[in-house]
Amino acid sequence: MTSAAVPSTFCYGANVHANNIRQHYLRYGGSGVPLVLVPGITSPAPTWGFVAERLGRRFDTYVLDVRGRGLSEASDKLDYGVDACADDVSAFIDALGLSDVVLLGHSMGARITLRAAARRPAGIGRMVLADPPVSGPGRRAYPSNLDWYTESISLMRKGAGAEQMKAFCPTWTLEQLQLRAQWLHTCDMRAVVESYGWFHTDDMFPDLARIQSVPTLVMSAGKGGVILDDDIAEMRALNPLLKTARVQAAGHMIPWDDAEGFYHACAEFLGVDI
Image (cartoon, rainbow, N blue to C red):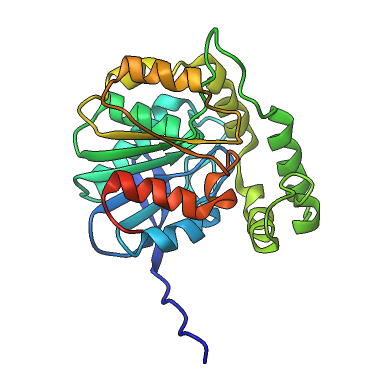
């Protein structure tokens, strides 16, 4: 006898006009404490669906398409800076009337959520920063090259598929490769290039000192090379209230490499089973 399939927590996809742009999002769960998930530099909302399905069992989960990605607004004139992206998150929370929100950002999304909390902490209950790039002025460069992103986007825009995607993400499952291949072409190239640029021109560390009213977890990947022990020590010096967790078996794309490790770190910090 086989066990019954776990029901999907997916509710719907929708758009909202917030911070003067169209923001697209996917909703999972539909009840409970609101959780807003902000993905990374080339991760449209659907690519995080497998994570949102799980989070939706415990949270009213909203996965954003960051401006210039997925089905959110993109244009030749749109501001793709970190402050504009951070203001999108705050405006999204206001537009949907959410309160006591859990903000969960990965990579670029972690930098965006951190800036959003530093600029306007009201309404944010807790925050999880998953492997944010620590690059910035006078700091070591982000370990992934820009070409890794731009070359894969160019290929997918020409109609390449999962087999070509495998060269960029060799450890991923076929399903993960297919989903990334399906959606990667929606990432605006200028948005990606400019975001990668502010990884190196904008310093995230001062923001950590400004968010002491928001309980925050920094989750790092044991194999990612993005956050090192010295970085964690500097973060704790700036914000002694900061919680940290390292998912030892994972590379930078933590839930892709060690989903259970990712959920365990979130669960311990948020105080719920996930």
